[in-house]
Length: 126
Image 1: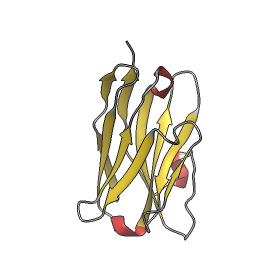
Image 2: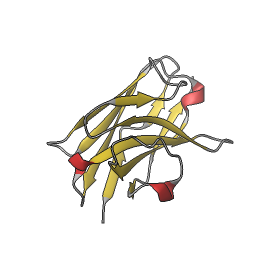
Image 3: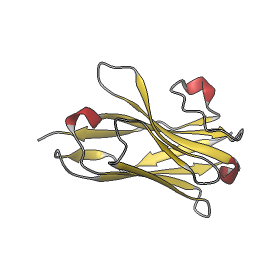
Image 4: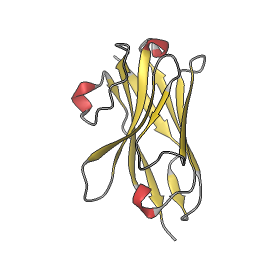
């Protein structure tokens, strides 16, 4: 069974940066599209970013230009570099993996993924 473990969350001031990491195990990481989905207070889950098995990257409009997703298949790890953070970025960030079907699926529902992490808390506040 696939396992994903996120790290790198924390408290940061507006305008600051954080780098999230997600280490995968138990499945063929290189064959999976990897995504970040966040749960923000008072709102439903929001798909944030994804990277497919060819390392093509995708972003939601709310983070485009501020966040950068990348992956290291040798380390079975996906990263999310978050810059120019705002309080609206506060939430629990989940890493999610889905076996590639050729087109990245930007889903928010956990049951549409083959692997889902417990999440890491990001708080942006002064």
